[in-house]
Image (cartoon, rainbow, N blue to C red; front, top):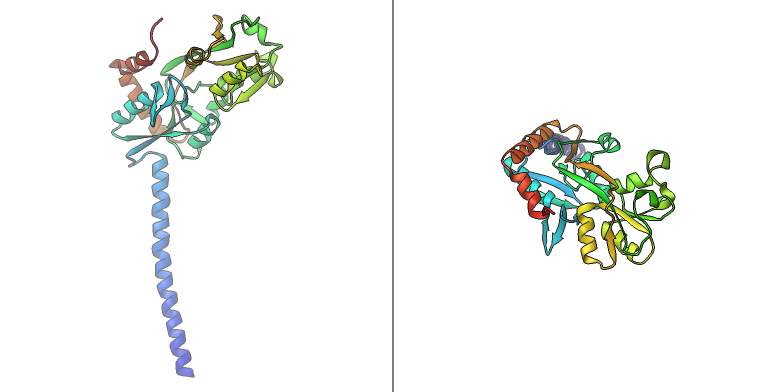
Amino acid sequence: MKLKKIAALAAVAAMVVSMAACGSTNSDADKSTTGSAAEESQNAGKDTLVMATNATFPPYEYVDGEEYKGIDIEISQAIADDLGMKLQVDDMDFDSIIPAITTGKADMSLAGMTVTEDRKKNVNFSDSYATGVQVIIVPEDSDITGPDDLSDKLIGVQQGTTGDIYCSDTPEKGGYGEDHVVAYQNGASAVQALKTGKVDAVVIDNEPAKAFVAENEGLKILDTEYITEDYAIAIAKDNTELLDKVNASLAKLKADGTLQSIIDKYIKAE
């Protein structure tokens, strides 16, 4: 019995040593994996650049068959090419984009995103690459002629966009108040609500507005602009290395005419 007990104890000791050794190896592997993930979030050693967007915003980003197309898609590809990286496009709800950036699920975002003070609290922005104009879509027989006529109306917007932010703000800050705003998951849903009389107007970027009006009879864009804004690329606050690289790439694309040629491809001069 003693011999059996001694043998059993020896076997247990051997197993403990073996498990300790395995544990050490796994720990090292875990550290390596964790370190790798941390590096990936900072783009060190990565060969893929993950770009978050909301592909319901033509001509900046949209789905054509099984392909992502648009101004932001092509600019992202040009940046990835300049950095010697592959581009991966992750399509998601607009409201999910900044959380994806801050948690490291995406490296950057091009989504017709306007630079605002609130957004700058959570992410850094690159130099501006385009100017956006917020406009008002109304039925052709509407009595709304400009922003001042919206104070007692129901306004449709895309959730999380600057149209949503500005319109939902208090009248003291130039908005109409949350009670006058209905936020939809995408611009198309807001326009459909306008067509069916659920809202009186839609505030959205000028370029997708033109596409929506072209596809839907009986609607028009007011000549009076709601607001003008700058579009830029959102990047995590702690990823300043990528921010510097992206700004350098943008400078090259502006200097050699690539950036303007991409914009001109989708937005024709009127």
